[in-house]
Length: 104
Image (cartoon, rainbow, N blue to C red; front, side, top):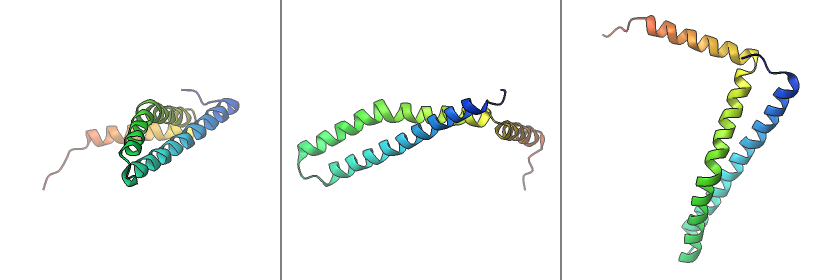
């Protein structure tokens, strides 16, 4: 993969930061709903909070987490440093695979 041009990299970086902050905000919202469901004495409120958590978890958190992962991978593989780390990691794997395991 060729290194990303500066404007493209900045655009992906802005998207990555926005998605990651959104993921953090969703997690805080889920925590708030969970605490509300736990502390609430009203069964209807607890039920509504847990149903809301299910909707947020199924429809928002997973796609946002995957977007954060993909944008982070694109950023890391689109830079010279990221490509060097990928090459050094694959070299370390091949060295580890060739070295015999010693058992005591």
